[in-house]
Image 1 (cartoon, rainbow, N blue to C red):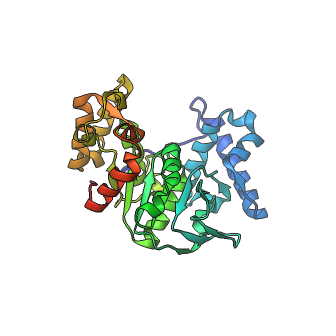
Image 2 (cartoon, rainbow, N blue to C red):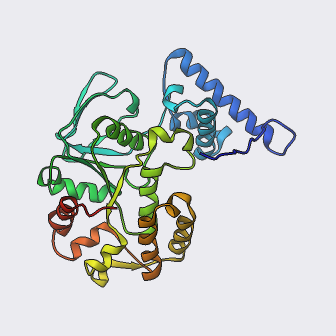
Image 3 (tube, rainbow, N blue to C red):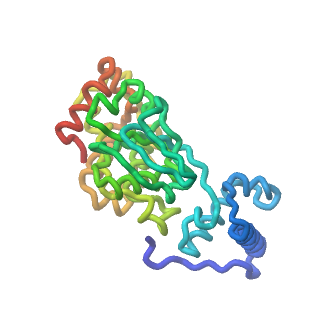
Length: 306
């Protein structure tokens, strides 16, 4: 959290401020009606009800974030739903708010995470750990390899890139409930590290709700930048850093939580020095099924995380 936040006043004579106040009050009116009628809307539905007023989805999303922060209340309590995109699979069973029981081991493509994570109850699992997978393609690849049974009993979860709030809330809820290790599998590039940081430390936009959305004990299993050289990645499996990548690395190294984590810092500096990056799928260019049959089992068995 920011120690001394800057307070902004809307509705004054400043240019554009009155219009922002109108939008803000309009959203509050919508929320009030939802609460009165005990009904729910997704952010997308609210946007399409007043496209002319908001112009872009981001405008509405920012206002909803401001209201949730101002009231110190999750958006679900304001009857505004954030559409889930994340999936979960493996040794996990739970009950959803509508009374239905979900067994995540029954689907070979993963179960879509609920829009109302807060109401999930009766969580049961024999999993030894949770594996957070950055990308949907790798998540599906691991399910196709039957990884949840090939390894120890475990849970796989993915936010399909930058994670949505429901995926992050689900991960935190499972960590709180099951008390098992959480391991992250990301690309060895600046954006993979950014995504890992969101799961571990939270995001700036949702910092007021970080206690429900971040897992500080998450460990970086891979793909570590140091693995690229250690495993002698073939040249075809590495990619030169772009100018945007280099700028992202500079910004990452300036963040307080990176400056206070020497191991993370060292890995980012390896990226910077070698000027190359690699995707998780590149492991299979070393040999067929290297990721599922060799890399993950050895990393997990011998504690190869930071």
